[in-house]
Figure 1 (cartoon, rainbow, N blue to C red):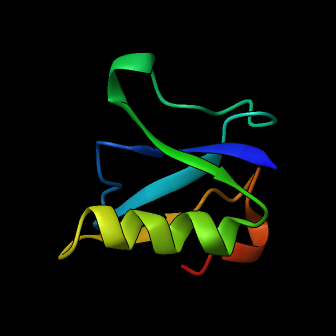
Figure 2 (figure 1 turned 135 degrees about the horizontal axis):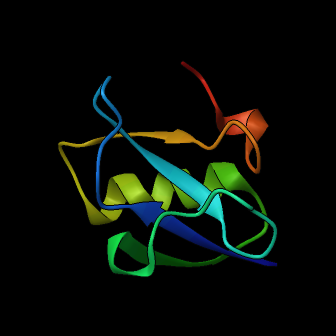
Length: 71
């Protein structure tokens, strides 16, 4: 299982990026990270982000979660 975080700051297009904290070289600064827990897949981590922060939009990081990167 991998540790996932979400960036508190949205991208210019409005999505908050979900990152695999174990492998990503493009993590946001520590003060901008929210821990989402350990997940088997980025899909599960994105679902957790939607559960924790309803009303926001989320997208997987292009580099560490490409199967969840949709924009």
